Length: 280
Length: 280
Image (cartoon, rainbow over all chains, first blue to last red):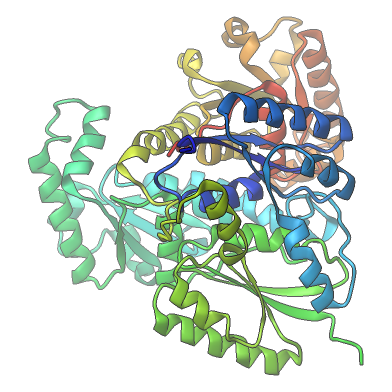
């Protein structure tokens, strides 16, 4: 009998569910032929909620005619035990990995929920730095201000709508990086020098580029049928901005086929910028 | 012999490293007594880079006098094999979990790198929605515009500096949620009605609150010793905004002791907002 090619996957956590989701999606992405209905259930932190999930999973098993996948990062042992009795293939992350870690570290784990995201006194400073970085990215977005560039970890440059803003915000939120961005305009492209505001900070500059066809399609959504959005204009700007990058020896990445996560981590790897994480 | 209480942990990936990091940090957070030096190495996608990592890990083992922990989400088999020969405790996520999944799904995994973050044609629409949500959050930040509230999934309200902006941006970036935010000012608090711009959207409103002491400390960084930042003022605003929430039956969460991840996922769970993910 052929198994159905649509399966349901549950990502269950007693915290935010972000880790279970990230891991679950990475694993399922390895099975291209199968369509997965993905359901995240965060904050399953009482036995009552755990029993409700088991009922949902079991009902799904009947509906799908195939047992669901259940990837969980639940820390609490008694909740894990309840969940493990559902009609699912249970990928139990903490059971699998805490034991070898306990053995290696010669200590028992604290089994406390959501440690990695909760704010302990010791973490507060790093956390604050992350929030400050978000405000820095917003205040220094799109060339709005240039007099704080001395405090920037990186200044992202590129033509209008090539992806600078979301990339800066992601670097700030996820990694606590102070990222400013500056749009390279047509006037800037006429000049063989760098824009004045950027000259003292050449070592902090990093470029974004994008395929002209994609840029044109993005710009068309904003200003349909404008010369700003025309393929001709996009071709010219992209060609010239790439020439500018190479003239001034500025590293750059192409954003066309990558997600914000990929663009951000590629930039940080290339520019040698460290991720700022909460030390414990 | 006592093992040293400082250990080094490597998070290794042939993609962005975000999943390895999230998982690694969750696992290490369970061992409170130990100080971990955490090193992320993304894009380990060639045998040459893999050998370099092994050297780094082995050098660290000698330096620390204890073997490092190595949590990897490397998909490529030959790179995994090289890494597994380092002097580390290797937590190999894909080896551990792909096999039971392959058995359950009666198919081999594609072992392709970075699927979960790469943009396939099929994912492009969802990805675009995420970027559009970021721009929506920025355009509708801090009450800047109110005429797009019909398109919002949620409108976050609260007093100045209680955490609305980073929360909205996180919901947009991580979950593709269109989140606007509107600051509740002193004038708004004098009125027993909701601010005019919000009245048609009461069902979309969600409140943030914060402990007055913390609010005062945040505001003091912005405008030191102002009456805006005084504890007295913060006490009054917080009391009144909470009264407003309860008067209009608006759900709210306290941001004081939680990370953006926690605040965002709590709001979404309470407000019943779905996470928008790339379907495969």
